[in-house]
Image (tube, rainbow, N blue to C red; front, side, top):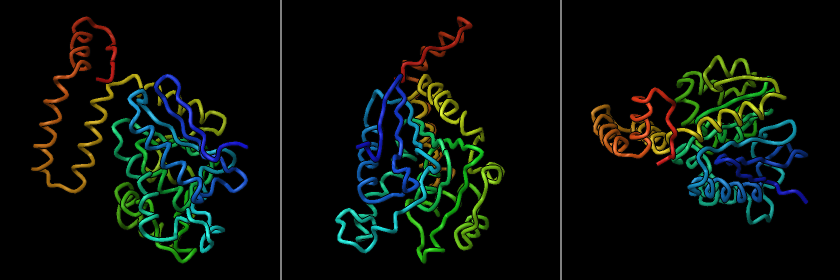
Length: 261
């Protein structure tokens, strides 16, 4: 039996693949439990310098699996707020782990699936991809940080429209709104994601981590506070092996060979 979440690591690039194609990669408790473990492992593994998350079949993820709600399933995401919050750590890790994350959105991204995609640093979508919040149409409110993430990408007015009306938007519309960085054909998507991930994995990992921390810190602090935080990270980065290598490469007129430290 195939794993409902597949994990691989090659050339410092980890890939997590949601693998319930018969259910459009709907997020049941078993999948979320495994996904939490895989994302945590990727965040903590020093050999991982970039991460891709994608889905099999026609969907990235259709969101929460409503068929398991209200049953005796001990892993039910809606069993209680504490359990849901543990699963929501997926979004926080994708957003804040000290390495770049990429969503390769191969099809529909709805509900919590949409939120998880929003938590990544880069989003590449196939031309067939579609996006919708879906929660209000099910009488629900949203989870996995979607309201916080979407508002910061598209602004409050558009984010409320997408949440309250639940309209489906195309890949082209998502690109125009800044939700996705790039669109390509479904056939090109895996290679496009791998090419970007390998480029990032060959980059200055410590600097990437500090850049992500700057963004996270600045989201809830004043500019004055952020300037001090940035200064600390800048000085720390200037003492890394990667910075020394970059200076030497600049003087030698060659490309730097970053080691991620």
